[in-house]
Length: 424
Image (cartoon, rainbow, N blue to C red; front, side, top):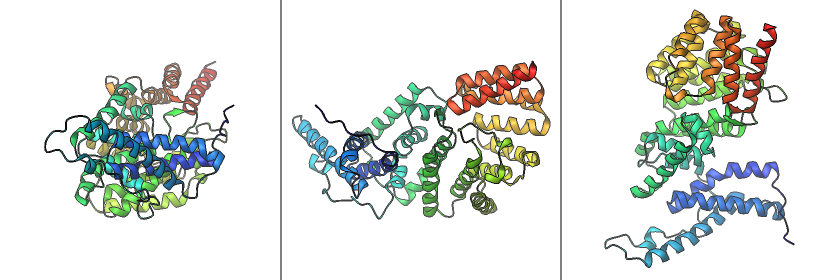
């Protein structure tokens, strides 16, 4: 009878999630083959899930995973060399033993001198890729997001995103440009994509797009950690500071975002005494310093908006005219429809719900938002403000049917039910 392994406990599962991008970064950096390294790391993680419950977590779990993945890579390299040697090798090619020479077994195991996740973050924003493809690939490798989650972040179908990620890997391999640690100049060139990746990882952690949990704290915490690490490298960059400020100011509200049962509490109903004042103070200091430098970017503007919300002692004391003005500046920087939705809410708070609904209507033909629940959710909220309960109920239910996050679906359904009861 085959002996069955015990399941991993929660702490070991979290350890594997945290270590996965670090191990992947180390293996890619050593072997330069993203696809094979990803497969090898997945095999190492599976081996850990099977062996650690019986044998215990090793003293150096990261080193253990790197060694197992490296053995898988060595097997792959040897197989590849044998295959290619059986084929005719075009004259002038680099000898295979130089292309695939594996390092010694003890090389780079403890990784004490660097953060492989940060290295992987910059490596994945590869010059052979378009920014969109680089971001998608990095979200998969660094953030651990599923293809479905990445597709929702990009407002595209899951099948489209799966093809994009697959093509990205193929393009990197075909380019001949190695997956290696970028130079100082290359880091600067890749920074925009890196920041967008961190922003999307944070968003998925703060407001999960799929599943039973409202938020995935491990993702938002990792995004904050990595953004701090980027700021250590680039302390004078205003957008890096702006992004870190935005994350801190937003994450500060997390303790008040949900009930003990995990049900969503909207911003205007939150107990603001639960907000993290230390994070708010740090965020305000960061964005204030960044804005004073003069070169204002999108992350700084979003952080400034978040700061206004966080500084208001209650929802009815929020400075909506200032928020509206900042969203107006942000709209001129980007054509992101989500910014227009937020601008519509701010417009409604300043000029009334009818003005906000007119802006929402301009997004009906935007293919990027076709079927997206937020379009219905915002419209429902503004219709409720306008006194159109029937219309609000319809769109709350439509939004609920389109979200894949269970707490958000529960909240939207409860909003519709509340209005239906009030109509009776």
